[in-house]
Length: 448
Image (cartoon, rainbow, N blue to C red; front, side, top):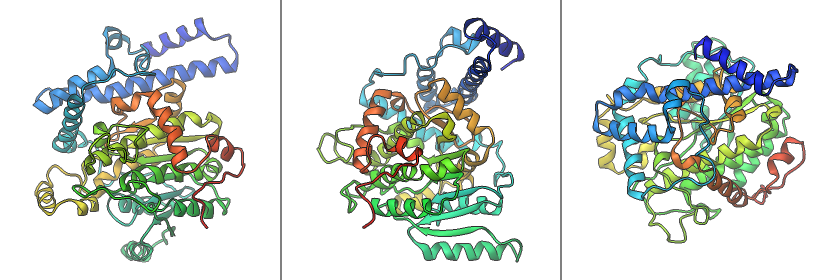
C-alpha cells in the first residue's frame, strides 16, 4: 500500500467517523490495517496469476480465484471495496462436479508448483529467540509435527509434545539433545494425548490447566488420512477422520482457553490442508452415517479439514479482542510424511518417486512455524476480525496470507456447524464465554 493510499484512507475515516477521541483514532488505525491486510491477501493471489496462466490446471484455479475474490474495477484501482459483502449468509452453490474439479485443480497445482512458489523461503525457516514462549504441539513424534517441535525447542521455547506414543517422544528428545553435543538442555516435555479418545483430550487439558501456567502457542498438528480404507469409528462413535482431524482439536482448543488467556498474546495454529478445497459440510450428517453421500476416505479427510477451518473461523469471532488469542490455520503443502503410511503400497511407491515436487517434513513445517512465531500475525488476525472477514487467517505453504475455500465463507453454515460441533464434543453453547471468565465447564467426555 502506498503512502498516498494510507493518507486517503485516514482522511476518509476521519471525515466519516472520527471526532478526535482516542477511541475513534484507534478505529481509524484498525480500518487502515484491515485494508492493508485485505490488499496483502489479494496480493498473495495475484502473485500466483502469472504462473497459473502458463498451465491448464492453473488457468482453472486462476479463474476460480478471481471469482472468489470478487475483483471488480474498483478492487483493481483502490483495493478498498468490501470483501465480504457477497460472502456472508447464503453462498451461491455451484454444481458438485465444478467444486470437485476446482478442488482437484488446487491440489494438482500445489503439488506441481509449490516449490517454485516457496523458493523465497529458507530451509529451515529462521526463528526468533523463543525463551519465554510455551508451545503445545500435537502429533509431534513424526513428520511436520516432529520438525515443528524440534525447531521450536532449538530456538529456546518450552515445548510440550502432546502424543499418544510417549516412548517415541522420549527417544526423540534424547536424539535431539545428543545432536547438540552437550550444549544447552532443550526445554521439552512429554504429555499423553490420544485424539481418538475425547476423554483423553479433556484429561490432557485439565492436567495442563491445573498448572496455572501461561500457554502462548497451541499447534493442532496431528492428523490422519487413511486413503482407501473402509469407514471406521472411534470408541466415542465418530468417524475417525472427523474425530482426529477436527473434533478432538476443536475440543482441545476450547478446553485450553484459560491457559491461552493467561499467555496472551497467544495463538491457536491449526494445520489444515489444500484438500479442504474439496470438502463439503452437512451439519446433519457430519459423521457420514445417514447415507446421504457415499463414504470415501478422501471425502472424509477433506471434509474434516474444511470443518476445522469453519469451526475456528467462528471461534475467532467468539473470542473478544481483550482475550488476546489469535486463531489461524495453515497449509503445509504436499508433504512426504508418515501420513502416507496409510496409503496403498502402489501410491506410496509413486509418492517416493516425485521428491522434486513434494516438500520434506522440514519444508512443510515452515508455515506452522511462521504462524506460531511471526510478530505480525496478531495484528493480521486483529485486522481481519475488525473487518468482519468471514474466515480466520489462512497462511499458505509459502508463508503468505491467502484465501480459504469458497465453502468456508458460508457463515450461516459455519454457525450451524459450530453449534452442532459443540454438541458432538459435549460442551455447552456458552463454553467459550464461561472459560474466559474463569468458570468451570463440564464436558460430557470428562475423564472418569
